[in-house]
Figure: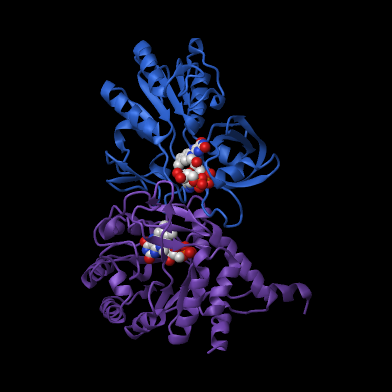
Length: 318
Length: 262
Ligand SMILES: Cc1cc2nc3c(=O)[nH]c(=O)nc-3n(C[C@H](O)[C@H](O)[C@H](O)COP(=O)(O)OP(=O)(O)OC[C@H]3O[C@@H](n4cnc5c(N)ncnc54)[C@H](O)[C@@H]3O)c2cc1C
Ligand SMILES: Cc1cc2nc3c(=O)[nH]c(=O)nc-3n(C[C@H](O)[C@H](O)[C@H](O)COP(=O)(O)O)c2cc1C
């Protein structure tokens, strides 16, 4: 075979992946809360090249969020306590969903609630209108809202009950987003799987805190806040590794991804896809360069499909 | 708005602890709307300082942009160590700009490094041969880059009285306002200064536009980090909140009556 043709063929790593019944053109998705509603930076970035976009958490009623300061930089990361500021499901349906008709990528709606009924009501409202949203990511793990998801996220039975209730009302993709702030993340993942989730995503932010020693005050208004960025990547990788050994449904890896190599680390640990969060704040187009980097890796190690290497490292240690 | 690798032309200390950096940024300049807009500078490709640093545009012409900054902490220290020829990744131009009426008697007030957008506006109005007044405040004369020259409508103040009028910009504002009964005030500076200007203009019933600061994350409305409490609610494209406004997309310029300094 002509060398040129051979190289062409080698570079054709199949980047597409499937979660539930949904096909993603590549495994790189933007993480909830770090890419707005998906439409803000469309003049800056060609979002149609992304594998998908997860929206900011949407709640039943609009939320103003927490008072400032809401964010602060920390070593290799940042703390945030936005407090789920969002427009609420009704305005989301009337103002944002219509914008998705031409977006060219998979939109996953992230939802948050304080009771099972709130989650149900949000999904029912969205299911009652026509939209091209491919699925829901259930935030059971936001650490910033006092009466919020935390109760679900740390409890296997509650996670199972919530997932079960939502599974009954939608055929769309159902992804349960897990918190690292628990004793055994794999057992929560098992509860989600048992109740019919199509996938789990992990991890949400890690509880953290930072203090201004001159003002003798917390740097973030709520004192406790959520740590993200490369600082939490090893925690994310370890979580995916543990979950991979406990469940059979796909895992979406999240936490501190900055480049193609970081994506690969997650995939080798057991993630079928990944979400990129904090890195978007440095460069909203960062996901695009990751896609190219993974193609090069595919060429170098002669990988025909990205799904071939999912969990290679974690299954070795089983 | 664009991200661009810009090439530094100059980076000099122009007054005590105050630096001016000029760089070549053809893409960002071509989208520039006017004084008041800002950019977000990435300090290094690594993650030593994860977030970009917001800086007001102090001038923009011939594909060149300049900023004026003060060394506050690690990030601005890194900026001051850059030399001509170095490359920085910059996102911009961001935010809104001052909206002025030509031929008004505008009073421009800048305090500390809040002088960057104010000087930019001063130059913009000067080109229109506008009859404006410039007031700049600093702690001491070493921090000033202008000369006190009331004939040219330039009023400087120093906290220690070492140059211009002694006291804060408020002393100069009262003097100038008494004389000219200005039609609009434009201000940028530390929050305590903006607060005093806010009460002054509300008391005297004159319109004012304030350029505010807040701790910024993304700069483009996707992280919801940089909020300020707002008084009036206008439905803006990204910042839909009633109680808070995102400084990066609704601001940094607000009508004095629209914001609440907590
Ligand atoms: C719209 C806007 C325009 C600005 N224009 C100018 C300007 O023209 N010249 C100038 O000198 N400064 C300007 N600033 C302030 C400047 O961004 C901060 O001084 C700078 O980020 C400090 O970084 P540092 O690493 O040196 O300080 P750090 O050591 O990180 O912190 C010192 C202090 O700087 C402030 N700060 C730190 N990070 C940020 C951030 N991401 N966003 C906002 N504030 C931060 C905080 O109040 C902090 O307490 C502007 C800020 C905003 C929001
Ligand atoms: C400013 C900010 C806001 C966030 N908001 C949400 C949210 O609304 N819902 C959610 O499920 N996760 C939210 N997250 C968590 C991210 O989706 C992601 O799980 C986490 O940041 C770890 O990924 P990263 O290290 O790539 O940022 C937020 C993160 C940040 C930094």
